[in-house]
Image (cartoon, rainbow, N blue to C red; front, side, top):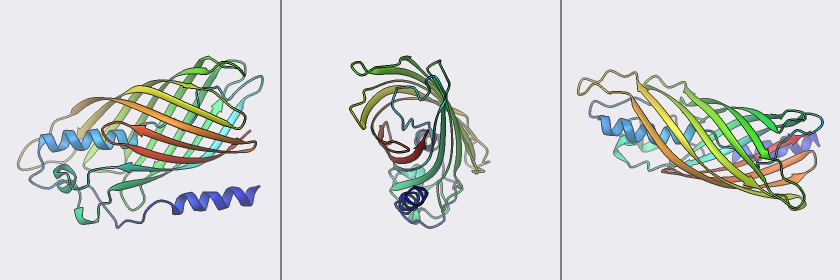
Length: 247
């Protein structure tokens, strides 16, 4: 089982496209509108992606999901705000890969899950960390779906030019059918972006942005090992694969 887990982990990491080193460095012509649009896209890129159904992990005993993820975030690399924000725009890919480690714990008895995720975009200076609390106020059964509310927080690190954090709230529904559990949800993401760069052309100001997001996913449960695929939709879309140990 350990060999299978490591083999799939390597496959997921290899699925991320190779890219040259890209570092954020605002050009002198970078504007406030550029900063707002960049903040929106990067905020959504680092926002919390559930990659889990609504049903709670815990029961009489705690439940655990521990695994790795690969996310591809689709961007408009030719947009002026990206072209003027990085050191080598010609090397910017149309899909930014993110590799993440994700841990979720389901509390015993009460239908509440806690989660933490850490990720990085290979060959960039982008790193992120996020936290979640999910309450399955309808736990679901063999005949009825589960429904949950999730609150989450994420923060960007490793980038000198700006600081971004996000807060999000979503509601999701899921229903298991033997080894398959489809799920879907909708929510709001609140992005706060603060510039650190001092540009001679214009003093950049803090941006507060609100975005509506939706997501759909499918979990394949194979006992100890689970697989999850998810698509997240907003101003930028993201597509993720996850493999985790469940116990």
